Length: 345
Image 1 (cartoon, rainbow, N blue to C red):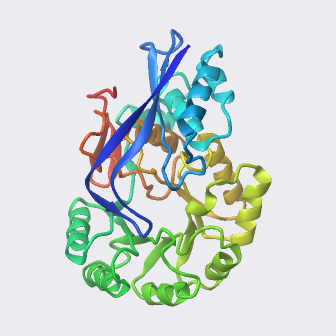
Image 2: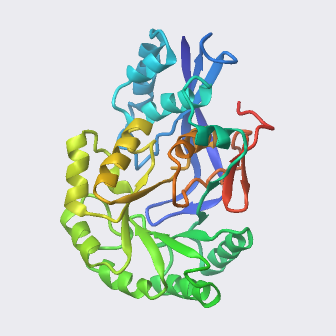
């Protein structure tokens, strides 16, 4: 096999604001695999390292990626190449996403129906932080497009203004009409979290992701036990590799849900282990993209479809960029579809 990588800079249509950062562009890395084994001779994956968030974010990242490509090139098959990889989350995701998109892996019936454009994956409408008028406009766009589950990034403007925004939604739409999810990206403190969650709870909130920064296990457990809103772990899952570590963190915190971002939590196989361990403890899950390009997003769609999810997923980030890759992915209403009238580079 001939395996190479290239750096690519994605540019946002609008500034992407979270409580952590403001982004106008995002760097990602494409893994290009050429082999006679692959239908069409080539498969492309995305090593979607997230600067400032991925555990492997370091000046040596491209050297690690280079070494992984050289080692994998000597393998006899793409599946063997994936097994040869180091435990570097985004690099594993890069090769695994190439394998998923190569046509070589065994597909399930549900997965085939999605790939053939016969079914769509229901997703939440993502509303990024902004000033109050901008967020109101974005919320209205999602509702007008037919979403029945909307996720709001909060923590970027005054909390009182965010409460007013949510109150405005609830004046028009009941919890039966619109499911509201919140994502604080660790923007609350352990001291103010429960007070804020109590004030938010009157608006019928489904769940809130990562109310405080990760690593504060006792405080997060306290919040999970006392919060009137169900808590979902997101960034908290980054960096745990062994089965015992995953069990420990789930037992220590006892969340209601976990959010799976395979490019950040060890790749697709590791994400499936998280799902299995959480399910045994009665903890729910959904998958979310981590600002991947359409290349990584297509692989996420294939993987998610194979799991037959029951809840709306977080895969609605394909239209964020002005220079994304041509794609068979298409948003129709609140569902992500795979329609084969285009091919990715």
